[in-house]
Image 1 (spheres, protein in one colour):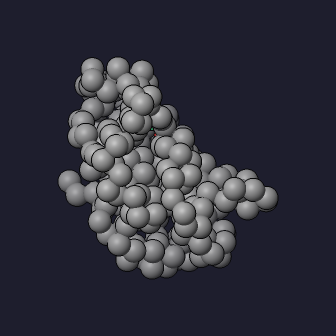
Image 2 (cartoon, rainbow, N blue to C red; image 1 turned 60 degrees about the vertical axis):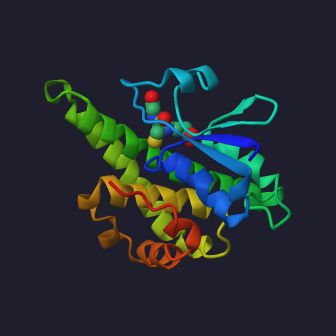
Length: 205
Ligand code: GSH
Protein backbone atom coordinates (compact mmCIF):
# COMPACT_ATOMS: atom_id res chain seq x y z
CA UNK A 1 0.00 0.00 0.00
CA UNK A 2 1.28 3.44 -0.86
CA UNK A 3 -0.50 5.45 1.85
CA UNK A 4 0.15 5.25 5.60
CA UNK A 5 -2.64 6.13 8.01
CA UNK A 6 -1.90 6.92 11.65
CA UNK A 7 -4.63 4.91 13.31
CA UNK A 8 -6.35 3.85 16.50
CA UNK A 9 -9.36 1.50 16.51
CA UNK A 10 -11.14 3.67 19.10
CA UNK A 11 -10.66 7.09 17.46
CA UNK A 12 -13.93 8.29 15.93
CA UNK A 13 -12.07 10.65 13.57
CA UNK A 14 -9.95 7.79 12.28
CA UNK A 15 -13.16 5.81 11.93
CA UNK A 16 -14.53 8.40 9.49
CA UNK A 17 -11.53 7.75 7.25
CA UNK A 18 -11.85 3.96 7.58
CA UNK A 19 -15.56 4.10 6.71
CA UNK A 20 -14.86 6.14 3.59
CA UNK A 21 -12.13 3.69 2.57
CA UNK A 22 -14.61 0.81 2.97
CA UNK A 23 -17.39 2.60 1.13
CA UNK A 24 -15.17 3.51 -1.81
CA UNK A 25 -13.23 0.24 -2.08
CA UNK A 26 -9.86 1.72 -1.18
CA UNK A 27 -8.89 -0.29 1.91
CA UNK A 28 -5.98 -1.91 0.09
CA UNK A 29 -4.43 1.48 -0.66
CA UNK A 30 -3.67 2.15 3.01
CA UNK A 31 -1.27 0.69 5.57
CA UNK A 32 -2.36 1.31 9.15
CA UNK A 33 0.17 2.56 11.66
CA UNK A 34 -1.22 2.17 15.17
CA UNK A 35 -0.65 4.85 17.81
CA UNK A 36 -2.00 5.35 21.30
CA UNK A 37 -2.09 8.93 22.41
CA UNK A 38 -3.77 11.68 24.35
CA UNK A 39 -2.87 15.35 24.91
CA UNK A 40 -0.84 14.26 27.96
CA UNK A 41 0.70 11.18 26.35
CA UNK A 42 1.74 12.33 22.90
CA UNK A 43 3.51 10.25 20.27
CA UNK A 44 6.80 11.82 19.16
CA UNK A 45 6.65 9.92 15.88
CA UNK A 46 3.20 11.28 15.09
CA UNK A 47 4.17 14.79 16.18
CA UNK A 48 6.83 14.81 13.47
CA UNK A 49 4.11 14.25 10.89
CA UNK A 50 1.34 16.29 12.47
CA UNK A 51 2.44 19.02 14.87
CA UNK A 52 -1.09 19.10 16.27
CA UNK A 53 -0.37 15.62 17.64
CA UNK A 54 -3.70 14.25 16.47
CA UNK A 55 -4.94 11.31 14.47
CA UNK A 56 -5.86 10.68 11.75
CA UNK A 57 -2.85 11.79 9.71
CA UNK A 58 -2.22 10.36 6.25
CA UNK A 59 1.28 10.09 4.77
CA UNK A 60 1.27 10.24 0.97
CA UNK A 61 3.76 8.41 -1.29
CA UNK A 62 5.88 11.56 -1.67
CA UNK A 63 6.18 11.85 2.12
CA UNK A 64 3.83 14.78 2.49
CA UNK A 65 1.19 14.51 5.19
CA UNK A 66 -2.52 15.30 5.20
CA UNK A 67 -4.63 16.11 8.24
CA UNK A 68 -7.18 16.48 9.71
CA UNK A 69 -9.94 13.96 9.02
CA UNK A 70 -11.86 16.42 6.83
CA UNK A 71 -8.93 17.02 4.53
CA UNK A 72 -8.17 13.29 4.38
CA UNK A 73 -11.79 12.50 3.46
CA UNK A 74 -11.67 15.10 0.71
CA UNK A 75 -8.41 13.72 -0.66
CA UNK A 76 -9.57 10.09 -0.61
CA UNK A 77 -12.88 11.05 -2.21
CA UNK A 78 -10.84 12.24 -5.20
CA UNK A 79 -9.07 8.86 -5.53
CA UNK A 80 -12.02 6.67 -6.57
CA UNK A 81 -14.31 6.49 -9.60
CA UNK A 82 -17.69 6.06 -7.88
CA UNK A 83 -20.22 8.72 -6.95
CA UNK A 84 -18.41 11.32 -4.83
CA UNK A 85 -19.24 11.13 -1.13
CA UNK A 86 -18.57 14.85 -0.90
CA UNK A 87 -20.75 16.55 -3.53
CA UNK A 88 -18.44 18.47 -5.83
CA UNK A 89 -20.66 21.50 -6.40
CA UNK A 90 -24.01 23.16 -5.95
CA UNK A 91 -26.08 23.73 -2.83
CA UNK A 92 -25.72 20.03 -1.89
CA UNK A 93 -21.98 20.53 -1.36
CA UNK A 94 -22.44 23.28 1.20
CA UNK A 95 -25.38 21.63 2.94
CA UNK A 96 -23.71 18.23 3.28
CA UNK A 97 -20.41 19.74 4.42
CA UNK A 98 -22.24 21.84 7.00
CA UNK A 99 -24.10 18.79 8.35
CA UNK A 100 -20.75 16.98 8.49
CA UNK A 101 -19.24 19.94 10.31
CA UNK A 102 -22.06 19.88 12.87
CA UNK A 103 -21.50 16.15 13.40
CA UNK A 104 -17.80 16.84 13.94
CA UNK A 105 -18.62 19.65 16.37
CA UNK A 106 -20.84 17.30 18.35
CA UNK A 107 -18.02 14.77 18.34
CA UNK A 108 -15.48 17.41 19.42
CA UNK A 109 -17.71 18.27 22.39
CA UNK A 110 -17.98 14.58 23.31
CA UNK A 111 -14.22 13.99 23.02
CA UNK A 112 -13.43 17.11 25.08
CA UNK A 113 -15.88 15.92 27.72
CA UNK A 114 -14.22 12.53 27.73
CA UNK A 115 -10.80 14.13 28.28
CA UNK A 116 -12.23 16.34 31.02
CA UNK A 117 -13.99 13.55 32.90
CA UNK A 118 -11.61 10.68 32.27
CA UNK A 119 -8.14 12.17 31.87
CA UNK A 120 -8.22 15.24 34.06
CA UNK A 121 -7.53 14.71 37.77
CA UNK A 122 -10.78 14.86 39.71
CA UNK A 123 -9.92 17.93 41.81
CA UNK A 124 -9.23 19.96 38.68
CA UNK A 125 -12.51 19.29 36.90
CA UNK A 126 -14.88 22.06 35.89
CA UNK A 127 -18.56 21.05 35.86
CA UNK A 128 -19.91 24.12 34.04
CA UNK A 129 -17.51 23.54 31.21
CA UNK A 130 -18.68 19.95 30.85
CA UNK A 131 -22.31 21.10 30.97
CA UNK A 132 -21.51 23.57 28.18
CA UNK A 133 -20.19 20.71 26.04
CA UNK A 134 -23.30 18.63 26.75
CA UNK A 135 -25.46 21.55 25.62
CA UNK A 136 -23.64 21.57 22.30
CA UNK A 137 -24.33 17.85 21.93
CA UNK A 138 -28.02 18.27 22.82
CA UNK A 139 -28.58 21.15 20.40
CA UNK A 140 -26.85 19.27 17.60
CA UNK A 141 -28.87 16.12 18.21
CA UNK A 142 -32.05 18.19 17.99
CA UNK A 143 -31.03 19.55 14.61
CA UNK A 144 -30.18 16.08 13.31
CA UNK A 145 -33.52 14.75 14.56
CA UNK A 146 -35.25 17.48 12.52
CA UNK A 147 -32.98 16.80 9.53
CA UNK A 148 -33.26 13.02 9.67
CA UNK A 149 -35.25 12.93 6.40
CA UNK A 150 -32.36 14.60 4.61
CA UNK A 151 -29.90 12.02 5.87
CA UNK A 152 -31.56 9.15 4.09
CA UNK A 153 -30.68 10.40 0.62
CA UNK A 154 -27.15 9.11 0.34
CA UNK A 155 -24.51 7.61 2.62
CA UNK A 156 -22.11 10.47 2.07
CA UNK A 157 -19.80 12.73 4.08
CA UNK A 158 -22.63 14.00 6.29
CA UNK A 159 -23.88 10.49 7.03
CA UNK A 160 -20.39 9.12 7.68
CA UNK A 161 -19.52 11.91 10.10
CA UNK A 162 -22.84 11.62 11.91
CA UNK A 163 -22.69 7.83 12.18
CA UNK A 164 -19.17 8.04 13.64
CA UNK A 165 -20.24 10.75 16.10
CA UNK A 166 -23.29 8.74 17.26
CA UNK A 167 -21.13 5.63 17.51
CA UNK A 168 -18.79 7.55 19.77
CA UNK A 169 -21.67 8.68 22.00
CA UNK A 170 -22.75 5.05 22.38
CA UNK A 171 -19.16 3.96 23.01
CA UNK A 172 -18.11 6.58 25.58
CA UNK A 173 -21.37 8.05 26.87
CA UNK A 174 -23.77 5.10 27.05
CA UNK A 175 -25.81 6.87 29.75
CA UNK A 176 -26.64 9.83 27.53
CA UNK A 177 -29.66 7.96 26.17
CA UNK A 178 -29.86 10.19 23.07
CA UNK A 179 -32.34 7.85 21.39
CA UNK A 180 -35.11 8.84 23.85
CA UNK A 181 -35.50 12.32 22.34
CA UNK A 182 -34.42 11.43 18.81
CA UNK A 183 -36.57 8.54 17.57
CA UNK A 184 -36.14 9.29 13.87
CA UNK A 185 -32.41 9.73 14.17
CA UNK A 186 -32.28 6.48 16.15
CA UNK A 187 -34.15 4.66 13.35
CA UNK A 188 -31.78 6.08 10.73
CA UNK A 189 -28.76 5.10 12.81
CA UNK A 190 -29.92 1.56 13.44
CA UNK A 191 -30.51 1.09 9.69
CA UNK A 192 -27.12 2.47 8.59
CA UNK A 193 -25.32 0.59 11.36
CA UNK A 194 -25.84 -2.57 9.32
CA UNK A 195 -23.55 -1.28 6.58
CA UNK A 196 -20.38 -3.38 6.38
CA UNK A 197 -18.27 -0.20 6.63
CA UNK A 198 -19.75 0.60 10.05
CA UNK A 199 -19.86 -3.03 11.21
CA UNK A 200 -16.17 -3.45 10.44
CA UNK A 201 -15.15 -0.31 12.32
CA UNK A 202 -17.28 -0.45 15.49
CA UNK A 203 -15.05 0.53 18.44
CA UNK A 204 -14.64 -1.95 21.28
CA UNK A 205 -13.23 -1.12 24.75
N1 GSH B 1 -10.26 17.79 14.04
C1 GSH B 1 -9.48 16.58 14.11
C2 GSH B 1 -9.91 15.65 12.99
O1 GSH B 1 -11.03 15.80 12.47
O2 GSH B 1 -9.13 14.79 12.56
C3 GSH B 1 -9.65 15.94 15.48
C4 GSH B 1 -8.73 14.73 15.67
C5 GSH B 1 -8.61 14.31 17.13
O3 GSH B 1 -8.93 15.07 18.04
N2 GSH B 1 -8.13 13.08 17.36
C6 GSH B 1 -7.91 12.60 18.71
C7 GSH B 1 -6.46 12.83 19.05
O4 GSH B 1 -5.59 12.58 18.26
C8 GSH B 1 -8.12 11.10 18.79
S1 GSH B 1 -9.83 10.70 18.82
N3 GSH B 1 -6.20 13.33 20.27
C9 GSH B 1 -4.89 13.55 20.77
C10 GSH B 1 -4.71 14.96 21.25
O5 GSH B 1 -5.69 15.74 21.21
O6 GSH B 1 -3.59 15.27 21.67
